[in-house]
Image 1 (cartoon, rainbow, N blue to C red):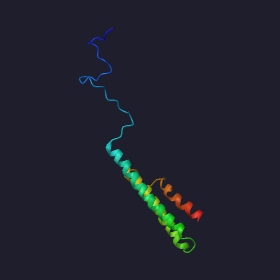
Image 2: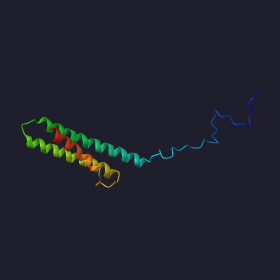
Image 3: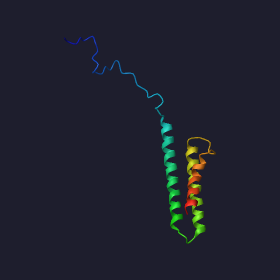
Image 4: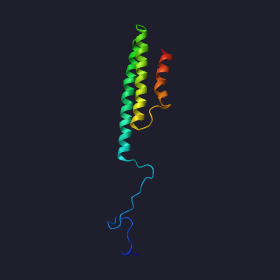
Length: 114
């Protein structure tokens, strides 16, 4: 039983009849959306690393300067809030939102732990 030449063989590519392009309906992101996500991840992670360094500096001071320790914790908290604001601003969302509490949470924990 031979294969007739009229029927197209399925395993071969036919340049005259390309396959329909399958879209990922809902999973496709534009270039600007991807750029926005990359920029926000980089900005937020950079600012949070800065805040982590300031938290570390506050805890390595020890009991020598208690006022400086509290000041550094508050400065680190400001950086955490700025990270949340930067992420929301990059995504063009309102910056005043309950998400700002996420930036304040490390300060509360640090002040309770010290």
